[in-house]
Image (cartoon, rainbow, N blue to C red; front, side, top):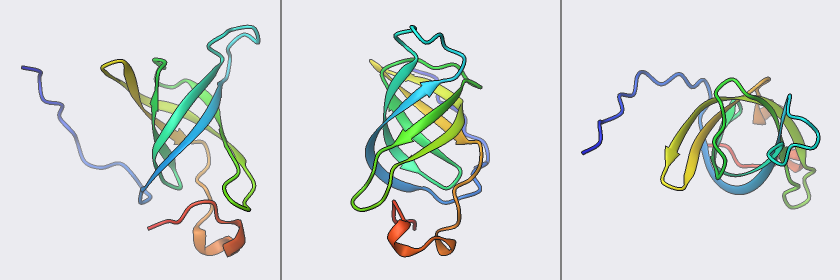
Length: 120
């Protein structure tokens, strides 16, 4: 039987939304010819301060990266800098937590036609 993971107090500052979108990320500091420099993720949860993603590649905590969010509907895509805060093996893939360098703006401060995701 596996050992239960102890979860401490929730450190999150922003509420999460459940989403399901594919994104790509570029790992900072990787050589331009490194075949692992660009990583594909599937975003499972998203907040103003970060994202919970699934990856087929193991990542190192504190690894800086830039996430590329694709356009959604009539909204533009965006690039968001962040860093890996955790990477846990889950069978043949990894559960990865990413903290954004700067929180996304409060949805109340963004015009409705610019909003990419509905926040709780």
